[in-house]
Amino acid sequence: MLQTIIKDILTDATSQIAVLAESTVSKYKKQAVADGKKIVTNMKNDLTRWISMLEDRKLTTAEFELLVKSYKTQIVMNGLLLAGLSEIRAAEFGLGVLNIVTDVALTLVEKAAGKLLSPSI
Amino acid sequence: MKKQIVLPLFWLLLSIALLSCSALKYAESSQESNKRMQDLTIALVEKSNQSYTNNALQVTILKDSFNAVINTEKLRGKWNLPTVNMWTQMNGLVTDFENAWKAQNTFSPVFIDEYKQRVNKLFDYIINLEENKFKPKN
Image (cartoon, rainbow over all chains, first blue to last red; front, side):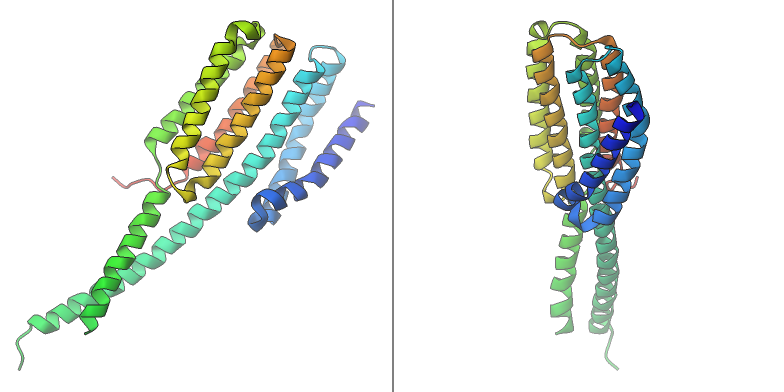
């Protein structure tokens, strides 16, 4: 019975991840979905333990819900981390390009200044 | 003529480069704030075996601190939006926690142990994102 509940929850969560990824990090949807599924797989151990605690009345329904909800937050955070890291990588690349252009521009300026200063033959 | 074009272009590119860099720069003060907020949140979760009524003021103070952090992070510019959104998520989590605490009045020790691990895990996302921003070379 416990295994069936867990299986149903995991299947349901997995199917909702794609929708969530689309609305939060559409540009990185593919990786977000893959990471989200990984989180759901990792969630299985916690979920099994929490359901067992719920059945033993060590956890209330409200407490169980709060714990499960924290995983929803984790999936969103994971998407945001991914988006943030991609932006950082994109900016790093942009800065690299700018550095090259700056170096080229500097060289040209130096050459031009050198020509202006050098005595004419 | 060449110099007239190249020089302004050089300064323009340099300005853009510096602006991009500052927008994504790692901030030691933000990282310290992230860790301080993590400690404060965990401390509050640990107190939730006591009555909500006795701790309502601490909850309000923590929520105010969350809002202050969100506002500070917003000031770091549009590049910092993922961090701002992460804080908004954490703010929602604290609000859910507060509502449940208010309704239930106390939480069980088992729940507190489990929830602390979850809160720590979520704060790790904010800390990791900050850690990956540009760090000035010494």
